[in-house]
Image (cartoon, rainbow, N blue to C red):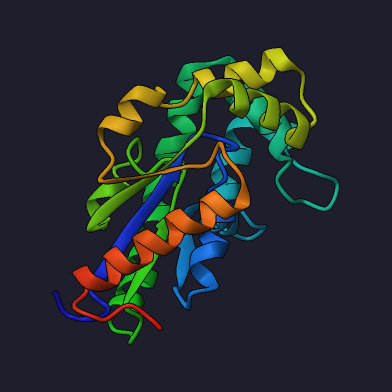
Length: 209
């Protein structure tokens, strides 16, 4: 495989440590695009997606400065599956379009490989944009505890968020590669190093010294 043609999809359940893993690859010179960052971009003031969301839910999902109130919207969509499906239909095509632009730029670059980081890699169909899928895995109990602490929500809401995502077993079955992020930093770094060597080999390049 020619250099710079390899795209690795990185996914995992909420609070599994996708950002931590991404930073570890970045320290090895690997570029990435984050679907969550792209999702935030497409609902900035002035974007068509925000206008569409506001038309459906009204001013209650906006802050005083006109920006999206993510917590208010999250409470709506997690309470009603049909609303979550509607939101996905309004945002996912726009996210995909921007991701395609950035991945095309990566494929033209001199990077040995690049990452598409997406919590909904499988659910959104974004797995079709990548060459391999890397799942960051932790036990569900760890996800729930981290989510409650990080997002300042109670345990019941944290459980609901985890339950709304793809089941852990299914995610693992669809993985080409897995990082176990339930251990310490040294263990994580060793796994990233191993995968970096593997991906560079797949791209036809030697591992860095």
